Length: 297
Image: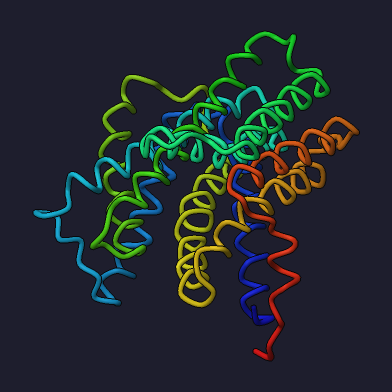
């Protein structure tokens, strides 16, 4: 991995880690539906001129069902669930709950392929969810009103991401940019009709509006561009490395900007979740990075 690609990897991790910070800021004000409606619409509008510039047509007549499925399970549903959780949970806890997606992805993949989980993968599932228990118990949120449901919603979002990753691996014929662009428009079509049914909890301030725009343009649009470039330059393993780095930045941003504490349970729970995810995926991110010889940019 070159130093430039390592910088892209860290930038992407930092951006996606910041998404939980922005949701934590905006969700208690706008509510999940208005927050995510704004996020996916901003992302779709950002990716539209880019797709035109790069001449990446969506081919809607052929792939509209594919975009609709991907937009539902990879964007609309998990975004809404995480935004619901963000009204109660800290950005740090959200980031780590999101990191359980590989656990669900591995389990769903085994069920779809009708292959039994290996011993290490099965142990990884147990270890990963033990990490969630450690986080919930140590955060002091477990006994607060609404917290158990918020934690369940965060895990359900990770389950949706896991299902989306299995679905995407079984599809072919569309590039990453087309998938991102088409799925964001599909998510917009799914979420926007819900806006009249779920009014915002409070008037939006300029800071909240900025958080929504940042979620759409930076955390979805620009992040996808970095993600595509990484896949092109170094392949799929770099994308998997992001999964392990995002919680680190999510915890860091929550601590720096929202004064969220970093206690022993936060560190122990995060390490436990990521260890379980590594066992399920069979991937050791630190070893992968260290065994790649750096090259000059």
